[in-house]
Amino acid sequence: MIELRQIEHAFTLGRKGNERRVPVLRGIDLTIRQGEIVTLIGRSGSGKSTLLHIASGFIRPTNGRVTIAGQDVTDYGEGQWADFRRRYLGFVFQNFQLIPSMTAFENTELPLVLQGVPAENRRKQTTELLEKLGIAAYADHYPSELSGGQQQRVGIARSLILNPPVLLADEPTGSLDSENEEQLLQLLQSLNREHGITLLIITHDDKVASIGNRTMRIEDGQLVSPAGTPNEYRKLEVVKP
Ligand SMILES: Nc1ncnc2c1ncn2[C@@H]1O[C@H](COP(=O)(O)OP(=O)(O)OP(=O)(O)O)[C@@H](O)[C@H]1O
Image (cartoon, rainbow, N blue to C red; front, side):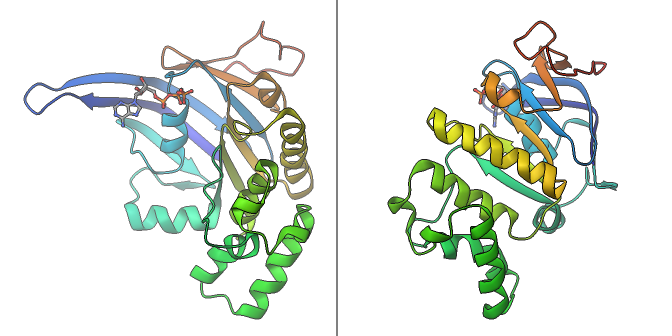
């Protein structure tokens, strides 16, 4: 479903005429099969977010190819990426990114509004999804009237409303307490099991990492399998750097 081939990335820092290149990713190969959950760990600054941004078209890699759902998207322009993201990718962020002046219902239906879906259909789809995620009772609440766990569910509802086959998550439980973290992990696993959603999750947290069918670590700009970590009881696959 997602293929990253020989991804290299270097940022350019410093003033014009005095720039230096800082390599962050040095030849990442990662294939994520449809219906798989892959968790990506690595110390702060190791390049996890950079890789996620490359997989979602917000950063163009210095080298390498990105293929998602059989489409080579590496050279897509901004408009093509925006269209592709709408159809294929959902995002889950640590800080939810809800619009404060909109209710849970309005936040969730927003992508449908932008697509021009008629109000009747929007209401039906949004209500069904909020029910599925256990937050229908809070449909009329504004984000400030919701707990962190509820806000995260609304964020996920909005990500799922267009039925993307892939969810990309950046520290999805970073703002949640342990009870809400547990519930969110169960939700992500059930979305994967019941709807076959492919998940790539980056995290610092071993517990979050443990829901992956595979966990990979970024080290010195390359991917390694973290055998010997607390996750070693799971099936791990070594990906050649
Ligand atoms: N826009 C940018 N310009 C220059 N350097 C950047 C930029 N974005 C990230 N970096 C650098 O690239 C490296 C990798 O950053 P990245 O955010 O991918 O790490 P991370 O593993 O996600 O870290 P964290 O776990 O702390 O979020 C860091 O050294 C960072 O300073």
